[in-house]
Amino acid sequence: MTVDIDTSNLPEVVGERHIMQPLEELRVEVPFGTQTNPASFILQKGSCELWGCELALGKPYAIATGGLKLALFTWHGCVVDVDADVEISYTSDETTSNVAYVNTHAQLEALRDEAYQEQQQQDQTQQQQQQQDSMKNNNNDAGPKLVQGPRVMVVGPAESGKTSLCKTLVAYATKVGRTPLWVDLDPVDNSISVSGSLSVAPMIASAVTVESYATCGIPPNTVHPLAMYHGSNSKIHPDLFRAQVDRLAENINQRLAQDENARSSGIIVNTNGWIQDDGYKLLMHVAEAMDISVILILGHDRLYSMMNSHYKKILQKNPTATVPKVLKLPRSGGVVSRPDTFLQYSRSRSVKRYFYGDFVDPPKTADTTATTSKVPQLTPFLLQLKFTDVEIYRLSSMALSSSLLPVAQQQTTDAVQISRVDLDTEAESLQHALLAVCHPSSVAKWQASGRARDLVCAGVAGFCAVERIHSETDSLHLLSPCAGSLPSQTLLLGDITWME
Ligand SMILES: Nc1ncnc2c1ncn2[C@@H]1O[C@H](COP(=O)(O)OP(=O)(O)OP(=O)(O)O)[C@@H](O)[C@H]1O
Image 1 (spheres, protein in one colour):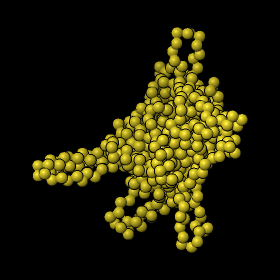
Image 2: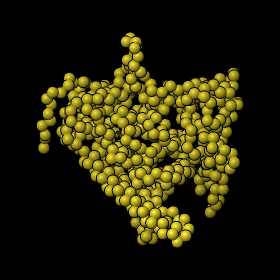
Image 3: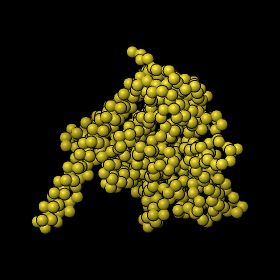
Image 4: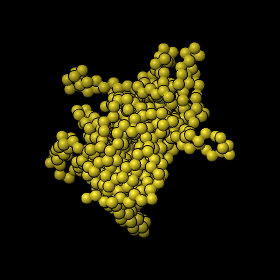
């Protein structure tokens, strides 16, 4: 049934106008372009949202370099203008997946409410118990059991809409005042930090914006993510991945133990699209390590059946075991696969955004002739360091295939290894490399234990990019997000390079 959308008193058309019926979605693809030719869209009437994040009426959203593949969805109908060199744009009414996602959010909300109330009751009982104990002079130090909100993991093949679903669930949750942790375990295309990392960020409503959802995940400087450097955006090292996930899970538990609102809000985990063989094992590892309570599978029957029967077997052996609920969700018909060049630009944009922030309006000055074009939000600095001032370690994995080991023997060396880069002979190979700067505390821990995983499975202080190598003066120029010396001299190297 079509509804009459009131198109009276509309402002002048900006670009192309789209009049959308309730429950329709405008799907837009814009290629990467130049900064002088930004893509913009504006909601002229009604209401609509980008992956759960509502657009403000009459506000132009400009994306400096284009490079968009997005969907604007309306519950009640709207008028949207899109001003861009669009590759393709069309309206679709096949949006049952959006309805399924909002229903999923409602079910998660019920679990969050339950967790919050249970925690309140438990705290009350605990207080009463403590009062009684103090009257009887009993010293019962057993702490209360921490009640957890839903721990959700989104899985599915590559380009099935996992990231978009995570964004939607995060946006809906923060809109109603929740503060879930958003975990991104996709080093190939990370929404929270630069690509090549595994990361987690505590989400709040102000960190969910249309501009950042349209390009990456969160606007710079709103929330402070914890990022571990996996070192590659083209492949996943299973041992390193497992070790980093375990440590992330510990960090998440520590954080949630301190923060009651975040605990009841739960976590939302985005995974990578590796679902076959070792990839499947890694997913099961994540589910166990992160104590996942709900697994959402995007349109993949085989994966659904494999996971379901895995947990059924566990329950058959031990009927009291706690296993996650496995749910299948429809995949949106709008999800598109991105060509390699698009992905490369998109990764490069996420690194550039790390150093320069978003493009924002220039500060207002009395000079009326001053430029009005957008300027980068942040200013990175160039550090010049001697080779002797830094220690650079390459991430590597020493995992031996079981076929290379004697029968029934296990590998004795730690599979997570690092090797020092000899700057006297290998400096040239660092050109444009992205380096992770380690925290002094993790460097100290690693030096005391000698275990590489103490260094690589810790959150990094930040990232630097090698701008130039001066072999004649034995020095290198690093682009750093802030002025002053680096927090530590120990840097991690993967296979990611970046140049402006
Ligand atoms: N409904 C939609 N309409 C148009 N484009 C969409 C829609 N949903 C998702 N997309 C786009 O499709 C692409 C793939 O979606 P998304 O990143 O969510 O998938 P993914 O499963 O996380 O992919 P990957 O496994 O490669 O990280 C993205 O560019 C996204 O912006």
